[in-house]
Figure 1: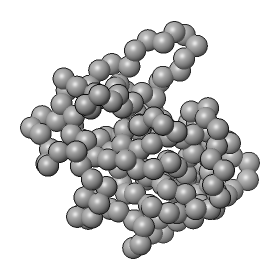
Figure 2 (figure 1 turned 60 degrees about the vertical axis):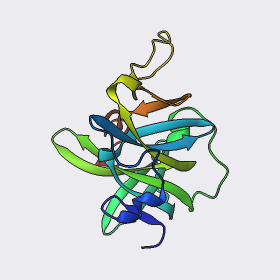
Figure 3 (figure 1 turned 135 degrees about the vertical axis):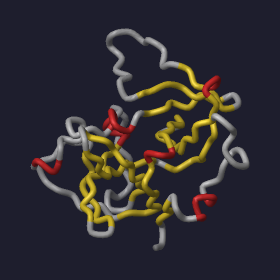
Figure 4 (figure 1 turned 30 degrees about the horizontal axis):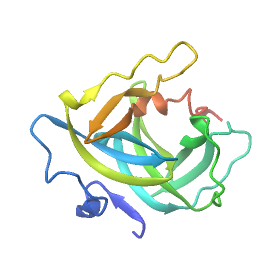
Length: 177
């Protein structure tokens, strides 16, 4: 399949890794860019990466829901993280976007949800010593989606918790609509 990188596929190396193999006791994160900031999600939450995807718009959904995609017969809602995070939406045509499909636990079930990102960046193995708690920024700053910060070289990568970021409540539970 053109434009799709499955995690069971050896072509995942096309994304690149900062280290050869995972360090013992390290957790792996797939990172991606939104504006100039790098974000990461646990690699175990990633189902696949779609280089270019066609998104079908649907009416009467929250503004951060870009639409839906057909993933081998499964209808998957697609969330625009730029809008979810209060950033300006990209002016790129909404039909052709880069999508990371995540496996999200919602209650006692698991479902697939896509996220629109500016670009997929890398896969990093990060030891527990290099993962820090998200700092307190005051009551006005909502960082409920962040599980922490990863220190990779001189960079800080914001780690996101997929289950909180893309819960049924957060995505407007498209299945209920």
